[in-house]
Amino acid sequence: MATTRTDPFKNFRFRIEIQGIQVAAFANATLPDESIEAIDYREGTDPFTRKLSGQSKVGTLSLKRGISQSMDLYDWFKQVSQVGAGSPGGRKNVSVILVDDSGADAARWDISGAFPTKYQPGDLDAKGNDVLIETVELAVETIKRSQ
Image 1 (spheres, rainbow, N blue to C red):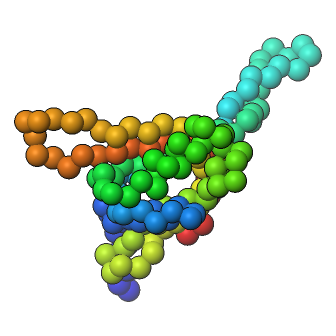
Image 2 (cartoon, rainbow, N blue to C red):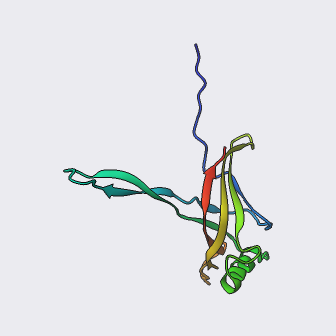
Image 3 (spheres, helix red, strand yellow):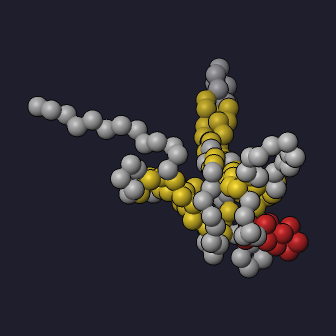
């Protein structure tokens, strides 16, 4: 009996969907990590401690792309910095979709309650000819792999 070979997906084919923002292709996306705090607990006269699960934490989503005429990401950052993440449109849902070799969606991470916490326009260098890369970091409430 022949078995079907399943190779892992490649990390260079992906797209980003940000609620209400039309954005060009991103060159890099660093997905947030998830962790659960481990708490030491000792009851009464027990001679040893037990581990209990504590609070869950989600890291930040970092997105990088070449600077273009679009100011959507910068405008979002400025809105949050001036009015706050609680303002209408301050928090957005974001999806990171990994695409397989055939162009079909292979994996999807749905992120809710994201808002920008850092914007970096990149480094200018008169001796170089690289694309100018802007970076935006997003605080994340929750992340769920839905596919």
